[in-house]
Image 1 (cartoon, rainbow, N blue to C red):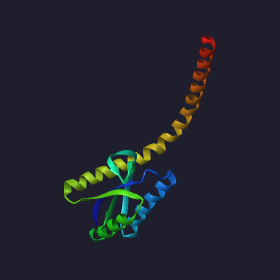
Image 2: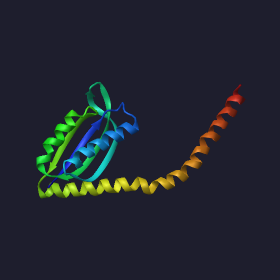
Image 3: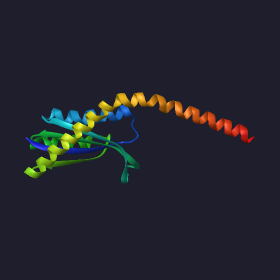
Image 4: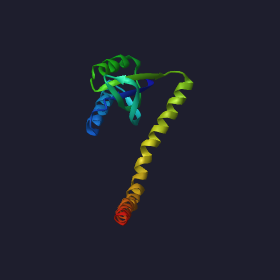
Length: 149
């Protein structure tokens, strides 16, 4: 079993549900070929360096996993067939230094996926005052405009 990383770029024209379904399909391809997903890291919508199929942007998602080397050919074949993906790249972590880097990346991805869950509750509480402030600012703007007339 070797360590691999896949970066996939999904079409930007999809809705959030369609993007999630495409990512789940990619993960299913990996697990159905005997891979174990260690971590995933959604990078979000980003601008591409150059247009791909007339798309200027794409949804980037990184998947870290462990799998037998013989299965990579089948995984890449299925990625090529998948029309939802604009591009993909597979990176193999082979040497001891690369494996240490892989473990570090997996830990960072796990921490990043846990961090938003921990901060969701304070963010919800912080939204209440933030939503009141624009209403007050709008009221002040209306008063200023009325006074100017």
